[in-house]
Structures are given as C-alpha cells and as structure tokens.
Image 1 (cartoon, one colour):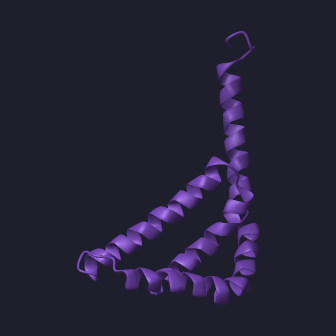
Image 2: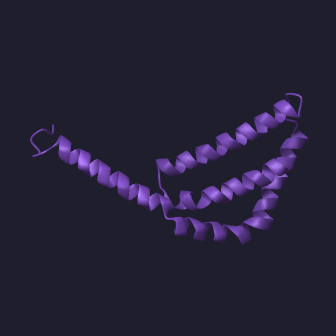
Image 3: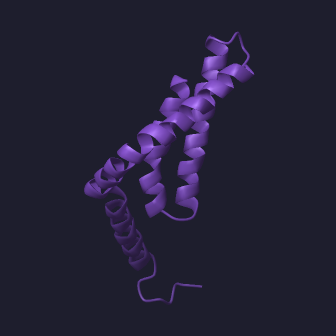
Amino acid sequence: MLIGLAAGLLYDLLRPPRRSLRGLAAFGLDALFCLLLGAALFLYAMSLGEGRLGIGALAAAWTGFFAWQRLFSPRLLPIFVKLFQYMDIFPRIRKKAKKFFEKMQKRSFKNGKDAL
C-alpha cells in the first residue's frame, strides 16, 4: 500500500508541470511516472514477493494510489501547484533555451544566405 501512496504523491508532484508543458514534454513526464512506478513494483516483487507480483500486492498498491487521490490529493495538490508557480522553473528554462537557440541560429545563419 505504501507503493501506491508514494505513486499518488509522485503523480501529484508531476501534475503541475504536466499542465504547464505540452506535447512531448508532458509525455516525457508521464513516461517518467510509469517508469518509476514500474521500477518500484519490480523491486518490490524481486525483494519481498519471491520474484512474483501477486494480485493482492497489486491490489494493495492500487488501493494506496486511490486512497491518496481521494484523501490527500484534494488538500495537497493546491499547495503543489502554488509551489510550482512560485518556483517558476520551466518558464525560466524555456526562456534560456529560446535565447540559446536564437543565438546559435544567428551564428549559423549570419545573413540568411547560408540557409537552404
């Protein structure tokens, strides 16, 4: 059940960036969530489940995830959203990347004649 609760926490932590990002970047965050959850379930099965992930353990993980979504998410998600807005990480990264690529483009194509 702890794996499910941790998955719910990770899901809520990744929700604000997924909302602000679009397309491939949002897909990347979804893929990261799936990979981390799959790795956690694999490690659990290999260490405690004698190499098998039983239906009971999987049901307990789902129960923990849904318990998080029902009990904790409505209270904590607004805090995570505000924290994400306060940190303002992705817009800053986007601006720096845009400036970098514009600078590289100006260096590569000085007067536009080099372009195909």
